[in-house]
Amino acid sequence: MMDFDFDLTNVRLFHGTSETAARRILKEGLSPRGLSRETAWPDCPSRTDAVYLTTSYAPYFAAQASEDENADILEIDVSMLDTDLMYPDEDYIEQATRGKDIIPGSTMEERTEFSRNNLKRFAAFTPQSIKHLGNCTYFGTIRPEAIKAYAVLNSEHPLVQWAMEPLITLANQRMCGHRYRALTHYLMGESGYEKEIAQTINILPADPSEVTRVLKLMEVSPHIACPWMSDFPNHSTPVLVPARKV
Image (cartoon, rainbow, N blue to C red; front, side):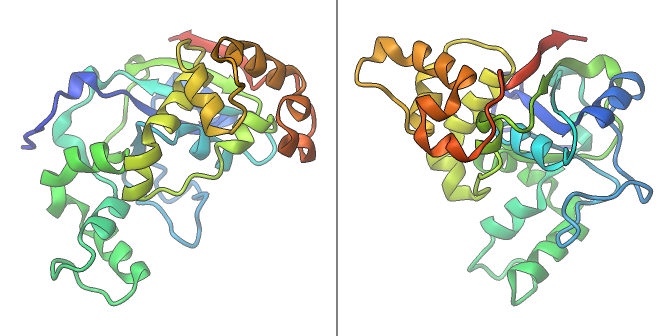
């Protein structure tokens, strides 16, 4: 049994996926991909018997899983999860044990593979994985009623495209994790995160009262609000379907 050393009720967990997968999940639940479904990361495959959840990077995972369709973010009701089925992310184990004689392997790939294959040996590190990397795994099916809300994103909008460039490391989570969480909440239709979003993508105007206006301009004409977005097509909004309660 796992003993969380922080208040899990204050943790918000999300899952990013394609719109096609989300439709199935809303009916059948969120289950491990198994051997029948391909991974979006063939060079570094995820476990086939676990679901991956995140506090920070759902827009990234959703965009990665959505090549030619919209992307979806699902928010999970953490209170409905069995904490005994929660384990760390293998990347946390690999990164947190670097320079220590804890796991075998001379390369990052070897150490990650060992961590992935032996996740259940590291159950005690689940809270740290959530807190310090922003990710964890769940060895079971998350029922449809445990999905609190979902949002459908325009995967080609610059704001969603920007989310595809995180460096998922302990250092990045420590320094920028709050910004990725803010982006997730913002894309879920929540207010109060505008300034952090503007700071993160370098469009913060001199007058703080202008933040909301500039973000709105970015949604309508992103290449005007932020010149580096000119390489992307102009789409009307990053969120096609605002977050809905399930």
